[in-house]
View 1 (spheres, one colour):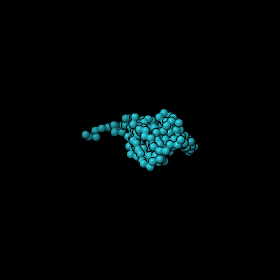
View 2: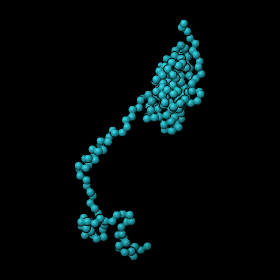
View 3: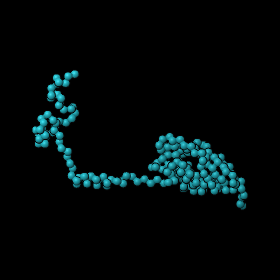
View 4: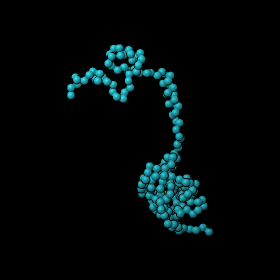
Length: 192
């Protein structure tokens, strides 16, 4: 292809989609030097007052978001489950109800018989979690405890579904019928 056959006007034609050169004294002055060069408008400078006003407006928006305080007991699914079982060990119905999404649903009623015997130590082991979504997880784990009267360690496997709401993990529901262990009373002295 021979470029020398094209006319000079075709070479300096404006690129499609770009605005045409502005009319005015600055554009006329720049065209006087080279008639074929496109006019370049000088950059427009905003004043220091407007810059300061923009900076103040941006700074005034800092900290205006929604406040969020996450209770450390509910910061992770494991800490929520530990808080729940510790509340059951202590017999604290209100603390156990706080671990659930809907409050009292799933927590024993005050004065109801707890299935755990009086125990000094309770801990969780064998924790396995299955994330369903970013805000929902299925967890299965073993609850180990030593009843106060007997020194033997007992354990049972439990499963729970936990959901995250406002940054805190809460128990949504136990998984199936196997969530609570079979009641085995501890034989010990009876006071009459």
